[in-house]
Each structure stands twice: as C-alpha cells, then as structure tokens.
Image (spheres, one colour):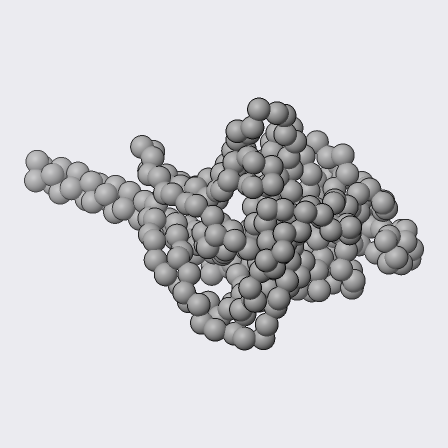
Length: 314
C-alpha cells in the first residue's frame, strides 16, 4: 500500500512538474534575417516646418531628419530580435525597427494573429518619410510617430509570478518627453499584455496621443467587430460620418448608398478609415471566418482604449 501511494504521489509530482515546465515563459535574444529594401541617407538640411498637412496635423519634424530616399536595392539584413513565448503563443519584438511587435503567433493552430511581414519595404507614409507596415507600431506622442522607423532602447525583465517583459522606448526629441511600452507574457495565458508609460520630463504641460497600430492578415473572409454600441463611424479629423456596420451614405467619396456592410474587408475596395464613434465598451476584434481564428484588443476605454479604428490600406 505504501509503495502504491509512493508511486501515485511520484506520478502526481511528475505531472505537476511537467505541467509547470510547459507553462513557463521563455525570453531569448537572438538575430533574425529579413529581406530589406534600403533607404538613402537622410536629408542634412533641417526641416523646421513644412507647409503641408500630415493626417490632420502640422508636419513639424525638427530635430528629426527627413528620410525620403527610397531604393529598389534589397539586401538580407540581420536584426536583433527579442522572442517571448509560452505554451500558447510566441511573439517577436524588433528594437531596431522602432520597437515594433514584429509578429505574434498562436502556437495551437499556427495562426499569425498579428501581421508578419516577410520583407521590410519602406513607403513614404511616415511623418519623417520612411514607414513600414505590419506588426504593432507604438505611436507616441503622435500617430505614426516621427521615429517609427528608427532604433529604440530596450530591456528585459523577469517577474516573481513567472511573467516576462520586454520594454521598448525612447526619448522623443520633438516634445522632449519619454515613453516606454512593456510587452509581457504570462505562464499559462494566451494573451499579450501591453503597458504604456509616458513621462513628461519638461517643466511645462504636454499633451499627447497614443495609438497602438496593429496590423492583421485580411482576406475575403475577414470581418472587423466593433462593440455593439457603435452605430456610427467617422473619418480622420471628423470630416465625414457614416452608419456602422451597414453604411447607407457616401463616405469620403465612396458610394455606400445601396447599403454595404463595411465591417467586412472585401466590401471596401478603396483605402479608407472607420473610427468607432462614442463607444463605452472595452474591446474591438477581427475574425477570419475561413480560418476560424482572429484577434481581440481589450483595454479600459476610460484610460487606454477610448478610440478604435479600422484602417483599410492598399
């Protein structure tokens, strides 16, 4: 009897040990190679002000240089990568590309719930010119922040509860403030946690925006889900409104008057944006009905998630 109990408790211990082993969070620093289109040297002449708008804001980038020379020269480039993973998900952060969350994968089904770019190819969309799509872009104190294509500082942390964090951040030269974003994984949890801190080191009051610009893989089966209290969507700078999810209006030049469900990616054939109007809920999501998988973003709408946007690019 004692021998049987001893064997029983040994089995229980081994099961518990193996379970804990598989639920641990691993964090590693490594190098990955990504085909990358090169950009030319930045402008040497300071741009104190450029008399053109940038998504409703003034284009003031000094003391950052303008990076406006794109090339067709593609090279295999090595990037420093910070990998976090547990038994459910695996994520990759690239400090040299603005601290971007480069990919996030559901290990249970192989689904990339954050868009993974297989190539780095800048376009002239950013405030300082060069900008890349994909992953999650951290935008402080402005949407598509000035330094989005530039390296940031980073550090890793391990916590008593077994969770692990990579912090990315920088000193923002235009506003002379600091920001950091902590990206964390927990043992046994199938979500990524992002924590943001904005530090005003100046003697004056500073206003700021924070946008986590998350890209996802879209196709004809993809649908974006705003909270059920969202009945209207609005364009940048509130220049146009429409019903949501079924639009019956002309919206920034696009004719939806026959009634179009714009929550479906396939139904909007031109680049545009739909900002959720006046929601008091704490989430937004996207579902690939074909793959039966998707992405949900959850946050306190009073503090961290007051605005949500569906942006459709080419």
